[in-house]
Length: 338
Ligand SMILES: Nc1ncnc2c1ncn2[C@@H]1O[C@H](COP(=O)(O)OP(=O)(O)OP(=O)(O)O)[C@@H](O)[C@H]1O
Ligand SMILES: [Mg+2]
Image 1: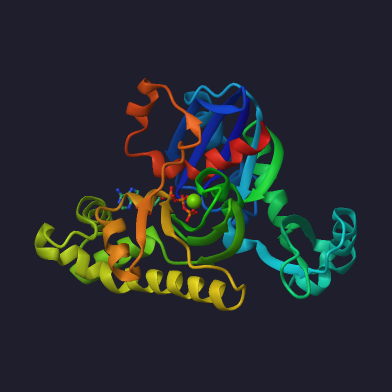
Image 2 (image 1 turned 135 degrees about the horizontal axis):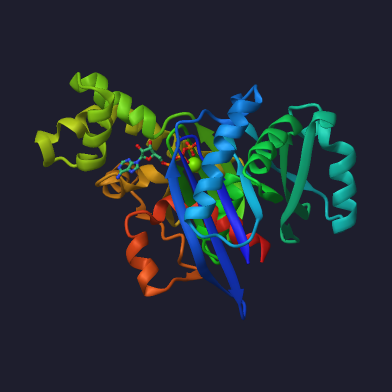
């Protein structure tokens, strides 16, 4: 039994998976909106207690059974980079990371938690090399998220980054794909090669910015703009395309970042062009989002199914309908621990 807890800036998602004969099965899940701030901004204990309570209620309502949870840190606040090493052994790489981390990360090593993953060993390049993914998170950030989990009465067993979790639930084992999490406050972009994170980037433009654009352009209240965005989205035929027109400039900004990511990955990392783009996050529910992106990028774009590697009872499928994109990170987190 393992539990993934995704504490987003607008919604919290929780997923419990059971591992049976090497397959995952969904045991329980839940999502709830909250009005709390982000844990990284918390100063006094009341704020931790407030968000902890929201998590506690969600945990109960979703009927989760295990108290041990894994969480994800916001991509924008962690540092991820791939580094090439000569063909050292796994132990030698671990010690090189330990002793040389300050060369690669922008925060003082004593204030950071540094982890690494070996992405691939290449003998066919000159010189041969090992690609290693380095992840560094400020200790203070980890402590704040841990305090929320503690305030919820749960026990923290693992900490990852959002995109590492997302790649686990959505990436394909035998292809290069782009995975994009359209949240409320940020859009996180990953390129995954054969199921491994190879590139990551976060931009502070997502659902909230979409709503603001609709509100300002059409001169309507934020709450109404939120409804318009969710109902009409990027549809040309709805409301004379007015909502789409308001969203177009800001949406283009996001798609330009996706193009830049592909370009960077191709030129700097000598990677191949992703075969498709897989969307997740609440904003991936925006009407016509996949077709609008297909046009802008000239690539296949699909809304991902976070349960593609998980068995789900037919009853649960019905209740999840429409909410699936929210769960991608929580599913990836839960897939780690079993
Ligand atoms: N059908 C929909 N169409 C468009 N946007 C939607 C729809 N449903 C939800 N959203 C948007 O999704 C966002 C919430 O998504 P999500 O739960 O992934 O965010 P979060 O994880 O809380 O945020 P972040 O990851 O940025 O901290 C909100 O901005 C909301 O307006
Ligand atoms: Mg999120």
